[in-house]
Every structure is written in C-alpha cells, then in structure tokens.
Length: 219
Image (cartoon, rainbow, N blue to C red):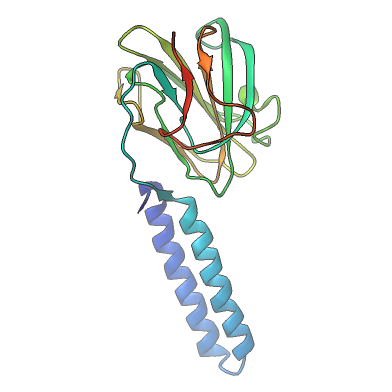
C-alpha cells in the first residue's frame, strides 16, 4: 500500500497545520488539558481519515483481452441498456460503480488499448446516484480502442463531495489493462459503456475492486 501522488502535498501541509495547531493550544492554554487532549485525538482522527482517501494499493495488473475489469473500487449501482449520446452514438450496456469516501479513488483502464477520444466537461455537483449526474455533473469521457477494435467508453463523474477529477491521458495515450488513467478525490462514480453483446459478470450492489474484479466478458 502506498500514498497516491494526488494526496502527498495535501497530507504534508495538513500534518504541518495540525501539529502547529496542537502546539499553539498546549503553549497558550497549558491549563486546558482536556481541550488539548481532545484536539490531539481529533487531529489524529482527521489525519487518518484523509490519509485513507489517498491510499493506493500495489496490485498485479491483469492481462486478458476477453475480459473487462472494473475501473474503480466501489459498488455496482446501475446495470442497464442505454443510448450513449456523446461519442459512440449507439445503444450500450451501462455499468456504473459508485465510489464512497472509504473506497480507493484510483481509476484504472478496464481493457488494454489506445485512447481514441477524451473530453473534460465542467458541470454541476449533484449526488453521484442522481439520474442526471452522468450528463450534468463535472465529468470526463474517455473512449478506449482495443487492439481487436472493441471500443469502450469510460466516464468519471464528480459528486457532491468529489469536486476534483484528475486524469493522466489524452487522445493517443496507450493504456495497459488495469493501468491508472485518473483519480477522483473523495469518492464519486465511474460509468463504463459496454457493447450490447458483452456478457455482464457483476450484479447490482456487488462490490468491485479496480483492475481485480471482472465486470464483463467480450464476445
């Protein structure tokens, strides 16, 4: 387990602020022992909570052209046939994974391929399970084209708490299956749009692990 690069600067300055804050309480209010102890305990709890947001497990990347792996840790909240209007312009099976604040926030490529399309969309910050969050919230859209020509659309969606989407790809970027392509701070949602003939291997409410849980088998 390591600390993701997105959290290192924040965690460094948060540590400085908490240490200085506790020192000032002890220095200027030496008689307020209860307050000082509560402040210390509260600081430790806050730091550990933020620390777990940015954990990044070391995993062995998959290598299976016939399987689509989960792009994120979380829980499956949507499995439905829908029309993908932004780029593919065709009916697809949408699988959505909700990332809670306690999940790992790294986003990973479900297949090996080349980024054919990428676009960032500014937007609202509706709760991630809101029906309109996938079209109205801040989000990114990425289309990956595999070596055999299969195209998958993956969408990062910011939620009410997650107001900072990070991405590390652009059109032409090559991705390994399970390779990191982005990060959503403090939880949210990732949608993946599968071909209609794909065999979905997950069910609603099922927990997923990014790059470790197969979510579909391609025909």
